[in-house]
Image 1: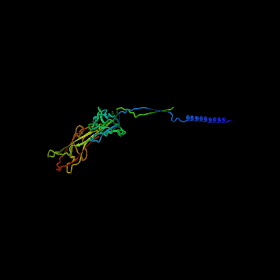
Image 2 (image 1 turned 60 degrees about the vertical axis):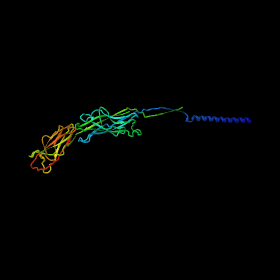
Image 3 (image 1 turned 90 degrees about the vertical axis):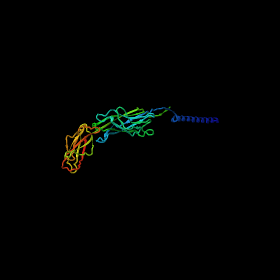
Image 4 (image 1 turned 120 degrees about the horizontal axis):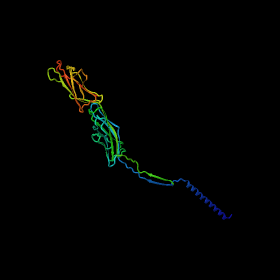
Length: 197
Length: 166
């Protein structure tokens, strides 16, 4: 064999090695590409939406089902008296306010007892707003005040709102104990209303 | 090709409520029988208008408030006496008549005291009795026999009035 032929055979061999190498490189590289996870590859799209809430003034009440007025003795020595705690939640606007009021739906039933207009009450201890001042008299034709709520008021949570949740106010009722009233039990429905602006 | 979409929430806590909210409560009054009595004079002085052994006389005045049960109720004002101090008249020589407004029925005629601490009726009340709101007035008019055997002097007895109502 001539030297040229040997050289040509060597070059061919080298070429074959080269080709095999590139072939291996492309094959496994492609395999790597095909089997590798898609990390770092994909589309991310962010879309934002604006959701708005209009927080309105709000009020809510909770009351005992009844309050009973009783005499402190049997010698006409005291008026009929009883107390009731009103629980309330309120939120008023910065330019608004509100109130808690009450009104008798009717006179006492049955007849023969004290008149509803003979029942007075005092307000005390309001934990939000201002309790009514002085003696108030129940009426069937008008609402009478219990609490006056300021602007920017809110119940619970602390900070600019009250720490108490709910807020409360104590109403102490009284009626004269007159001999003319017939013995018996008399009742009337009282409607409490909370208004907020 | 995957697409991941992220939505960003800007706010929450939405609340709408009415501007007024109402709730009811029942107020009740329990009216029961009651009574109270007030003596207008702490001492009733017995006197006489002559010196010929006519009876001694005196008036105990009082006011009262009363309310008896509308159905089946009753009430009363009674008086009971202690004996006179030593050497004084006998209780059995003492009697009284009564007056009262229409809220009650005064004792009928003259009521003699039969013994110490024995209550006797001054005014009686039936069911659904009501005095005036500022009270009603009544009297017990006393009469005491003036016996020559009684030594001169001042003698006292205690009259206890009791009012009750059911």
